Length: 367
Image (cartoon, rainbow, N blue to C red; front, side, top):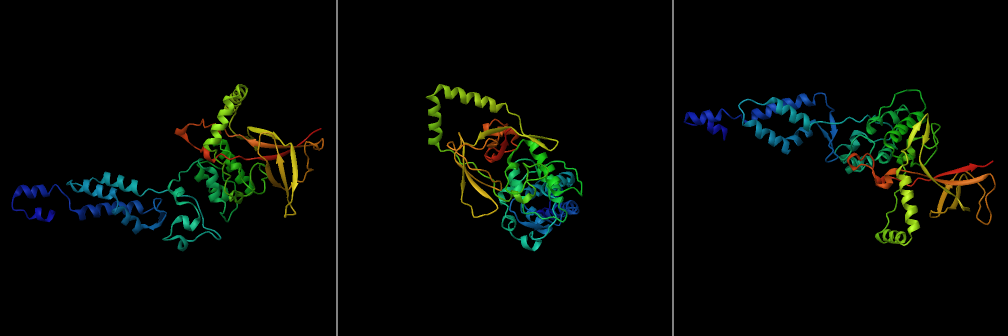
């Protein structure tokens, strides 16, 4: 079209042609800006919309097929002088990327393992989670599960490399124990967000704090999900409250009390955690194939029966056979205020649906 305007017989048409740039001129100008932008960028990046690994040519080809590129060419071609600032802004916006600290080690997937494949297939991480990923405290337990299979040359790096994922500042101190590094990271997550899902783990307890795990692999087990109440169960519960004014008053006072509980926090390696305590009224020993652990079935007022497996051995008891004078077993339920669904949805740093029922078994020594 523009070549026809170049050879137009009248002067006005040729002047009109001078107001436009050739597509090839615009393409060359944009490509120069792209080359500058990618000069210091990684050679390959993961496309968060597809989960695919892309080299630079694929990135450029994808950009040229995008609506952003077509709009940029369309707006640029109608100007006699290329508006380089606008081109630079558009290219910079499209080719932005985030660096997550990582070093491939041991049995982790190599480049040839994930090139051309979806990230979900190669790493086991849900693609939707990768697309929606944002650094920060939200969904902390899920991110810890992602990292649970990591292997690093220096053991402290397992914790240090996750500081960017959670958006926390963690002092690097090579030579400290792995448990200390991980403990400091988890301490910051709980202290800054009040999210107690980091306490949902299975494994050996840490020397840093016994409520925290000694190793990141303790988060490999999927978090416990609270079963949802059916509509009938909710209506039955509400109806029973309406029929009993005393129960309504007790429930209201309990709600107010829970509403005023403080968030979980750390101080000098000690975890300050609001809890609800349930004394165990009955403990029965159950068969267990593992000779190093013991399985008990516990009963407590206000809770369903609970089966636990522990390395601790204690004497079974029941209302007919009370526990020994020095032995008192408690179930401690860490309390998360988000269960009241009072948190600000505009600043949703952690989700209600991920608040777990975490029980800690403690033995209280009397006398």
